Image (cartoon, rainbow, N blue to C red; front, top):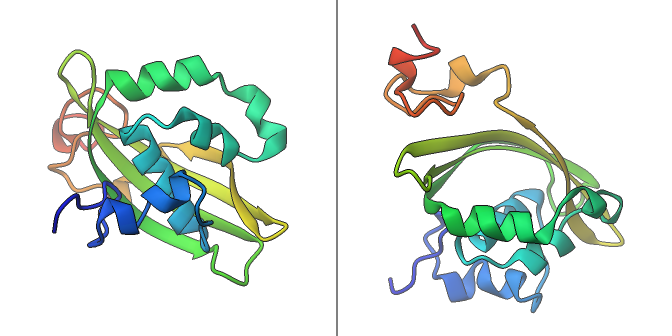
Amino acid sequence: MPNKCFCGSNNSFSDCCEPIIKREKSAITAEQLMRSRYSAYVVVETKYLLASTYPSQQKNFDEADIKAWAIANKWQKLEIISTKKGQINDEVGEVEFKAFYIDSDGTPQMHHENSTFVKEAGKWFYLSGIFNPKNTAQTQNRNDFCACGSGKKYKKCCGK
């Protein structure tokens, strides 16, 4: 399929995350918003990343910093670990995910987060995230790169 979406779905980018990022349509679930936010990092759409953050939290993020981080990394893949609520009729949701990337030094990294989302006036927003959730040992494969960011495989680092 041409231009497969960066979020890991089996859809094309133009049918999946791109219309959400361009605000031609809204995410209908917390997971769909999370996937579109990952894709926005890949295509460096910082205005969307800020707009999809809950309004009271936007002041905690700097667009220039987001852009620099998005550009500095080569995004590899997104892995959804779990979702809690966050469906079309819910007002809150959680999505645990791992985003794999290669940093500016060429070191493979993994960003592991449990994100909280809220829906207000029918629109989903990213509210907050807990990095490297405590259940990492249960969800991380021993051959994955360690969630601590060391660049080592889990079995040679925190999984010893």
